[in-house]
Image (tube, rainbow, N blue to C red; front, side, top):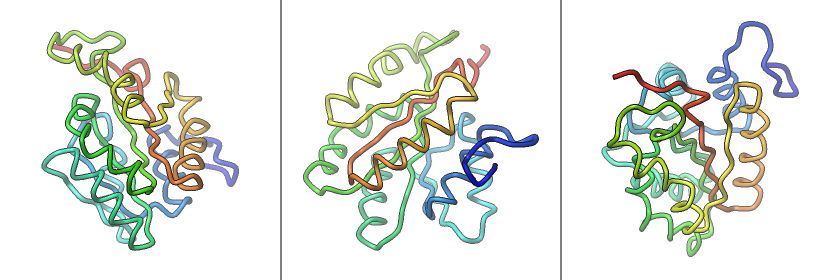
Length: 177
């Protein structure tokens, strides 16, 4: 990735996104294992300068982001859209606690989905997040990811608000069943 955040050479958008997060001092990567975030999870596990934290449930990542902020660090929460529903009560803390939350959500129940169990939360994710005062941005194509991520990073860490980036199935690909 260039100094201006453009994807260069053979870098894929997940690699460029990881590099952008690291360039913006994100040192804590909280995640529930998910194929849509595989590159970022693997890179965070291999990076000696970050803490990569596997969660048992997504709402733990909201608390982790609060703790990171209190400790002067930056965290990102990586999850699938089905996990967004698990976070609803904890998201209320971002308003009262006034701490930044940056999350990247790999979408299911979206473009090309074949699993009927994924549709209810996949279709509700954006509405549910917005109802909890989370700013929602979306990336549908590889060339949008870095610009959307830059906006989300600025919005979350400079304003102290909760910002979610939805990574659509058009972008990450629908799982085949």
